[in-house]
Length: 425
Ligand code: ADP
Image (cartoon, rainbow, N blue to C red):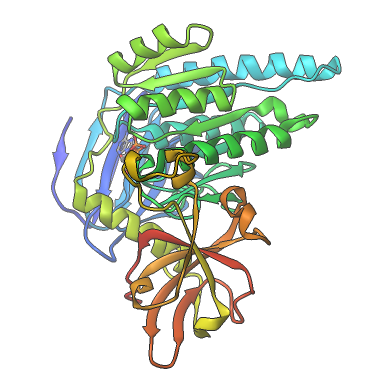
């Protein structure tokens, strides 16, 4: 592999089964990619010849070619190199196995049987390319005319909606090269924390709820043969491991793909012998994120939620009377066992609804706009979207919010989350 320095415009000739890797350097920078000859794909999405594809600040990408190609990059990139070793052949074989299971499901559906395509879950520690493999497998499925469901249970990144949520989308088109999958009509549940451990009882309830909803959507549906691809958190030890086995059970998973960690693979083979478990290596191109990089990626995700990439949306900011807001928090602070009423369990505490008085402490917090009409349904209702508290005027009892929708704020119930965002636009 050859490492190139900074550059503004450069051509690259790739041999078959190679990939060009690069990162977009600096804030507000963009890089354009063009396919000059041959064929190439970005995480499973085919490139059209001579069309410029824009990558935004912070993007880390790979352009892979099965048959060889020439590419041009315009803009400042970092650590650009051509890699000859990639796991793409193994990823393609995995796709072929899933496609066989989908064909099998098609045949069953044709015979009038109540069947469904493979439900596949991707697990592994942080930064091993789980989200990327989901994207590759979903894109390959779409390119075969399939319509798979993508479920993202990784609350740390929250690729559907924002961090602190779990979400699902029906994937009908390949991901856009620079922007990912289209997010039309996502199903989003608010968790409100960045790690499942913050409230594991609630996390597991949401996972079960999501599994039931996804299963409902598949029953008697022709699209059911396309199956489901589930992305999970990188938390794979102790309670994290248990929560992965809970996901497998709730979704009645058929295939678990373990990326990178043999120990996790062996544990799963030992504990869930009746599910097909596959080990795959991670790509050498996956970029490890430092804690500051993670924080900035989360911020970018929320900014993108409101403004879109490259400010293509225009969110609204307006003032709301505090008296108009009904806010709850999910989960009360844990009490030592000795202080708990005799008939109360820890789980009850973790799912308790606590009314929140609007005040300065809300500043910069994200609030989920629930679709529940009554507080008792708050825990398991999906959400319509998120508002961010920009400012609080305690004296005049007003709160200024940032919202994807214009005012007035509907008279819905809001859920306070731990997720914070400072709007700098
Ligand atoms: P995980 O989901 O396991 O945390 P990701 O799939 O998000 O990992 O990958 C981490 C980062 O590495 C992402 O920014 C992704 O775009 C980048 N990446 C993944 N595969 C490659 C590759 N082959 N070459 C370059 N960058 C990659």
